[in-house]
Amino acid sequence: MSPQPPILSLSGVTKQYGDFQLGPLDLTLEPGQVLAFVGPNGAGKSTTLHAIMHLLRRDGGEIQICGVANDPKDPSWKQQVGFVGEAQGFFRRWSVRRNLDFVGRFYERWDASRAEALARRFDLALDKPVGALSRGNRAKLAMVAALAHNPRLLLLDEPTQGLDPVVRAEVLDALWETMEDGQHAILYSTHVLSDIARLADEIAFLRHGRLVARSAKDDLTEAWRRISFRLERHDTHLDGLDAARGLRRQGTEHQVVSSDHEVTSRHLRELGASAIQMSRMTIDEITVEILKEDHRVASNRVASNRVASI
Image 1 (cartoon, one colour):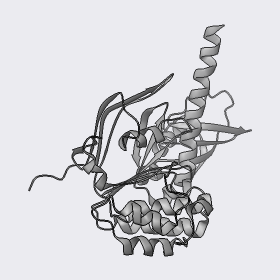
Image 2 (tube, helix red, strand yellow):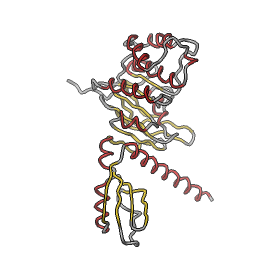
Image 3 (cartoon, helix red, strand yellow):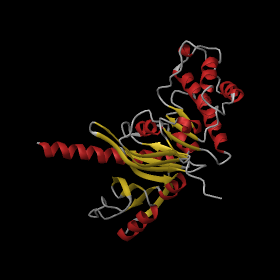
Image 4 (cartoon, helix red, strand yellow):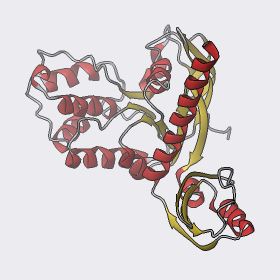
């Protein structure tokens, strides 16, 4: 039996917008994987999703869905994709039900009973005009439309934005249920960090259009620690402490955040630190620290460019 192709494959994908360039971006997503796409605004997350859906023309590279190129001239690959983006494209004067019936005509595996069941589960009124829906309810409608044809790949751009906590939990439960057979994959961007802890297996960090890191969530929570320690010597240089960042001092008491607690603790013992204590960090806290570091690097680059131009 030949090996199953990746559900999603990006190879050398690029897109230029003025001073911004996405890529070259290489990314694969295998069956059963849930990948959170994380980065500051303007990092290129939505651009990547739009390139996959061919909502924009990429400048270079190749994209395949389940082994098939995302060719706009042969859109059969779209049968395998459920997409939720900011622009949803529903008819505002039509009811939710009529919109779903219309969308269903384009999908071979559309399940009208599943669409209705999801709408009820998400507390979405089927007979209400789309134009009368709140932003959160339009997001629910987009999610129903994305899930009702049982796509192999879900591309979700801020899927839970605007949802109340109860419905957000229902949406995440529905996504979990979709993943149970191990034949589906999800790529989603989010600023709701609790969604990462609930849903993602891996996290990909995007900065300035480049994929700077990709890691399993469990690997991150195993490696990162908040470390407090005591160091009597005031002349010890700590700014270069291996794998550590965010140093705080108060007299002889210190605290750092470490991306590799074993390396940092070994370095601290070599420096003569005592009372070393470590506390685990949540994936939310780790993500914030990584994004803070990205922001610091970007700010330093801007400052350096300003100095160089004077």
